[in-house]
Length: 128
Image (tube, rainbow, N blue to C red; front, side):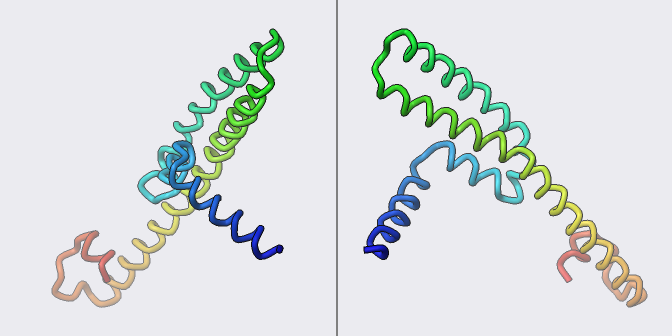
C-alpha cells in the first residue's frame, strides 16, 4: 500500500512539475545561465501577495469557500519565489567562485608549462 501511495505521489509530482508555470520558471533560474535572474524573479512574489490579499478580502466578504484554495496556491507560489532569491544568489556566488578558481589554476598550469606554443587565451585555458 505504501509503495502505491509513494508511486502515485512521485508520478503526480513530476507530471505537475512539467506544467506549472512557476515551477518551470524556478527550474530555469536554477541553471547556470538563469542564476542571475533569481533575485529579480523575487519581485514576482509581489503579485502573488496582492492576489492572496484580494482573494482573502473576497472570502471575508462572503465569497465561496473554494477561494481558500487559490489563497493557499498564491501564498505557496509567493513563498517559493521569496526563498528562491537568496538561494540563487548564494549558488551564483559559489558558481562564480568555482569558475574563478578554475581560471586561476589554468593560468598557473599554463605559466608552469612556460606558455607552451599556445597563445594566452582564456578559452584555451579553460578548455584544458
